[in-house]
Length: 260
Ligand code: 13P
Image 1 (tube, rainbow, N blue to C red):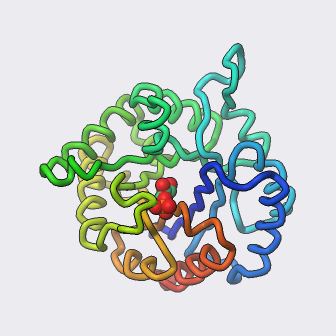
Image 2 (image 1 turned 180 degrees about the horizontal axis):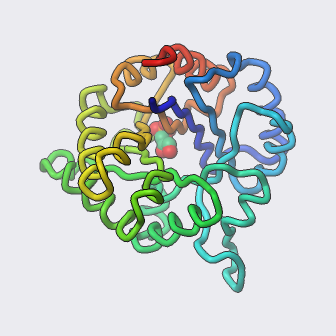
C-alpha cells in the first residue's frame, strides 16, 4: 500500500529565523505521527539548517529542498548540490516545478540530470509535471504529461524510477484558488500511472506515489484523497500558515485507514 505523502513547498517564503519559529509552532499543532501519512517541509535553501534544528533529531517531519544542481561540486556559482542537501538532512528534493520551468528556463534535459543526481545520492526526487490552461483546453493534457514523463525519466532503470515521486501540478491551478476537481486529478493520475506502467513496469507504477498540487486547502484535501489514485499533495500557499498545514496533515492522517 502507498502511504499518503503531504509536502509543503514554501517557495521563496520565510527567513531562517521565521522558519524556526514556524516549525516549533507546527510541531505543537500537528497530529500524532501516523503510519499512513508522511509529512515533508521544503523551505528555501537558506532556512534548511534552522528548520532541521527546529525539527530535532527524531522528528516525524522530513526535510525537503525545492531544487538542486546535478553536479556534486565545482564552479557553478549560485548552485547547491545533492551532497550539500543530504548533509543538511534533506530526504526529498522537488524538481522541475513549473515556476522553475517558466521563470528560470528549466528544461527536461536538466531535470533528467537532476533526478539522476538526486537518486545517486539517496535523495528522493519529487518530479513536477502538469499542463497549462491552453493545453488543457485544446485537449492535449495526456500528451503533455506523457511527454514530460518520458523526457524526465528516460534511461532510468525500473528500480531507479521506483524512487521517484510524481507531482501532478496543473499550471492553471497553482496559486489561483482554482483547484482541479477530484475527477480531473484522478484522470491525470491514471494517465501518469499508465505511462509509468508502460515505461517501467506495472509493478513499479503501482508502487509510485503520485501527488496532486494546485490550490490545495484544508477544505478540499479530503475530497482529493477520497480516490486511491491520489497519494498525497504538494502544497504551496496553504502550507505557509501553521493552522492550515496542520489541518491538512490531520485530515490526511485520517484519510487512509491502515490496510486499505
Ligand atoms: P498553491 O498550493 O499555492 O497553488 O501552489 C502549489 C504548488 O505550486 C506547490 O508546489
